[in-house]
Length: 118
Length: 482
Image 1: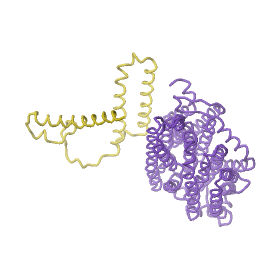
Image 2: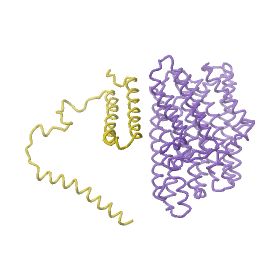
Image 3: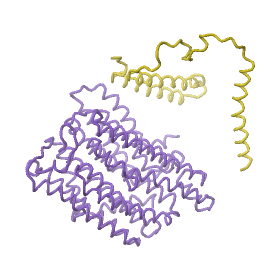
Image 4: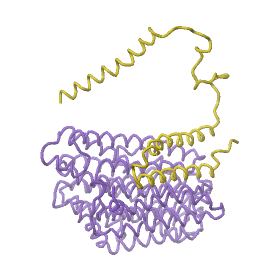
């Protein structure tokens, strides 16, 4: 019992220490050449345009949600695609069923007009 | 997972697949022919009813003892599918008339029924939680189906927030019980308690948290605050379905968990159940008296009925009464389900086309123009009150009798007195319908009328021959629960 608490304690210390060490080391070792481009807000690598306090169309969230589902699907399909020859027929069918369900969702969203930017 | 596992859950799995396909098929049905969607939804429920009743009499566990199909689950699954069928019949006309005919209703209803069926078959706290979510999430959406209406949005948000809160209680309770017993399966928890390895304080706190979560679902006082707003705001057919479906599923979980996993704690929990039952009966009935809106009135009445049923969970510690009292709870659930679905069917027919609130006054003079609807409503109100020879009388009779047999005479007297109070507001509806000038207009759709009349007949028949239902409920407990 106590030994497992000890493990948790060690993990706690390591998990706090590791990022702290990494940040401090980066601060000491990294070369410092500041430029205006480097100090703008990071937005997936693209320069930001205009104000950030703008209204988004509600449609944006629908498309965002649908995108997210397929984004996650890719994550699931990678291991499946790499290992499917060793998993046998069952896993292949499972994967196809998964894609089928997601496609059903896409068809539903499409037919309901979720992608019409009006 | 093997094929035999799937066979055990075939009714639920079938219903889920059917609901998903219905969602897609509906896209290709033109706007004028949406009746096809309704019929397909009803057909799915009817097939599920057939599949599940085929499992009557057998007992099987599957998915590593996480689900169990026995007479108890089949009995309740039958109740859920029938309630879903009636809700579809009521909803089709009502939703078209009030201009909220969104065909997702049918798929969502089917999903919710599947969750309720899974709840009745749960043999593990994880499955209880899963089923709770599966049945609740579609109900949150269904409550908000009329959403440009402010009441519907308010009800849906309230239901969602408080429902999520209640789910949190269930989950935390499950976690504590897992900590106390190293297991989440109901049989495992009981074994751990009996062998004395369970950590008792933790276990009792966990069980109490579960009780709080389920009390939210069955709308027991003091966890009932959401009920009037949700019942008033949601479309009437949805409310009708919710008032029996969610309640019966909550009681299914309560009965399974508290009679299977914690039979040895029943003694400690008896006073808690007694206080809950007493409070629920009194507060529900007294608050219903002053309601103007008939939807709010029936919401408080549904709280009161939850109190009557809770009374059956009090004497669980006494093995000589436990079977009878659980059976009387099941009997009352069926009786209450038929009556409340009928009452909401009549309200769905009377509701204004703008979907605004329906007051008790809106029923005045109904007997003049719609004698059948008024007659059916009279049956339902009398059955709610508990007037013999209607089903409601026998339902209450069994409940009060087992309470007295279990030694809780005070509780039975509180129940009797509070149902005396309830007579006032139920009979007021009848007075409105028969002795006031005509104001009421109602839908003339035959489907709702037939549904109301059939349910009224069921109330009468069950009232004339009550022992059959009670025997069925006893059999439902025979191979698994008691």
